[in-house]
Length: 392
Image (cartoon, rainbow, N blue to C red):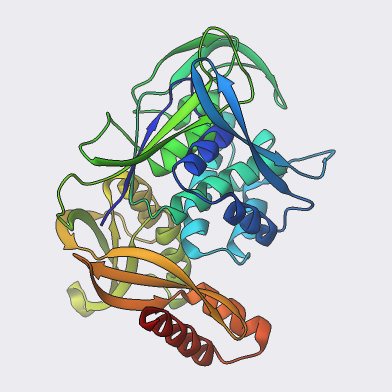
């Protein structure tokens, strides 16, 4: 069954605030810690603290890392770091989508090419950890849709690595183009570029959707102002009915001049932008030309980003869009032990009946590589371990 997360930016939104809220609704701090170690952040340690912010008790997510003299990284640096690490594809896609949207905004604001964008505050280890931890939390909670209320944008100025900047920060304004916003406090940044990037990349604006609430949580920012509770609330839910169908958008374009070597990067870009699936089909086009029909399936909140990726990374001059329905199995992850280490198994069920179980590809490949075992052997062992757990 699909899961929806509603983000209520009561006092604003930042990466650490949303990470804290996700932990309160069920994300695992230990999984975030493990992901950051996998990413290669040196001497990283994450922890939480229960704090008061106005009338709320909230979770403050904190990252401790090795201090850096010049924490400036390019979009290409971060893209390579995340793409080449051992995190799951779902976590990578969400994290890269956030960084790419922020990079696009910075490129627009500063009038430079996206490849020349240097992250300053967002490129520091703690900010990278915030974004990746949010991606880990969303993936672990199996969230399919993210809806967010109107974020507050402050006024005044703030000191940054770029010098004195107006509030709201120019990149924040660019990221939230098309979003309804509300006024925030003077001289105090309530919605950060990281928070705005999360909304722009992964969420759609709207009010609390119709759903059955599973759990809610509140994440705290570092400051504790007297005039406004500095918190972000997260509300996790499932559709009010037991209907397992949902709308899905089909984005497609035919291309007769895309070489084989450029197809894999295009597919990767579509998945990174949030496509549920992406594939290419050989077709015979007008004038007898052989070509490819490139298709991406996506949900509404990622439709714009996936369309942009298809236009940007493909060779087409237009993208067709249609909407259809799909029936999905409710999916959960169970971890089993193999002789070489733990493997996550994705389990699909419908109305309580299990239809499929499949060991996660990334886990199987990682263990096969480290243990020197063939991937099919690890896959079979994980599947058998899961079957044994069902019989016990």
